[in-house]
Image 1 (cartoon, rainbow, N blue to C red):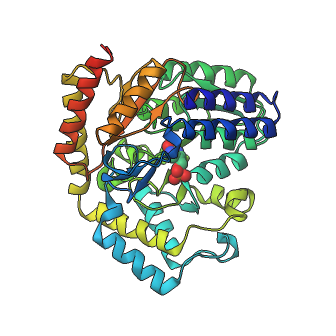
Image 2 (cartoon, protein in one colour):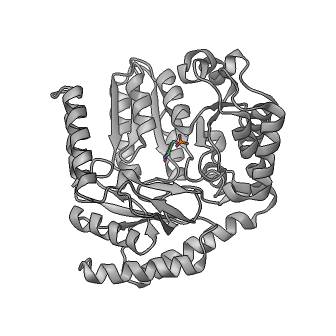
Length: 420
Ligand code: PMP
């Protein structure tokens, strides 16, 4: 009910046909009615403790319940690592709280600089720029990079931060290619070669957040032998958990030198906040003054920076933190497949369970919650129509008991709701 209404509202807003004030009033009224009626709503959850097992409360006034939480991207569970917590506390004592201004006005301290150097060294890039979030890293650089006569080609499943960056830019031509289809990308590059008067920019994600699919990076890089384009890769869901020492999939595939911009976030594997873009010095010099999200926005805080540094050190020096995650992910995938679930092409710790009937999707989510298993439904317009899903995002702190319990419960619900 709330999801369908929310979707309708979102589309009406996008269409620009209905006044925002009218939509806001309608939404507020619906929300109240929903809470009064005791209707379960997924946007009212409060997860206390951001952990694999924590209490979750709803706005419905019922007591919070202990749940296995599957909706966060804290892949390595470093948010609870004693060394990370200790370094954050030390940083607050030493540097205080906020940083007060943007990087170009002196907002960065020695911890931020250490992160920049570390990422540049890890990825073999001349420069790394830090942004307050992964979202603004993508949005800010793409907005500055894409010019009027350029052709921008993005994957169909691209994240909102990529789309928003392009919309903010002066580029007039942007198109998408079929998700992960190198063939389709090639045909779009052929079209661009014939028509584009500026540069061509291709944007992909090394691993996709809604499907858990991995990008065919090596094949896409190979297209550079026949076509002239800049390649922009978002490693939000692979940095810290793939590649030697967690350096990501571009590194793993040995293509960092062929990728012009590697971006990622610090909010997932490294359990903090912030984003980065690694590139050549030429572009970083340009972005420092042309990416508004860099020049006109405060940096992430010293304690965020301390958490990133501590996490990077743990990842680099303890390869088992990554292998534990992959073992658990493989175990859960194996058990789900054995129970009959079609996981399509997902390979990463993001495991989607597809339920194309929205009513069933919501009911199953609610039933899971009642049994102490928490994740959120994803439906249109976040994913294509009739392609709803619940994502189970494995992290290193999930126990095998939690995995077993979740898979067993899902199998029971699949039977009850006649999923296959
Ligand atoms: N890129 C992708 C692919 C993402 O999934 C996300 C977060 N969901 C971001 C960028 C933005 O990262 P952050 O939430 O740290 O701003």
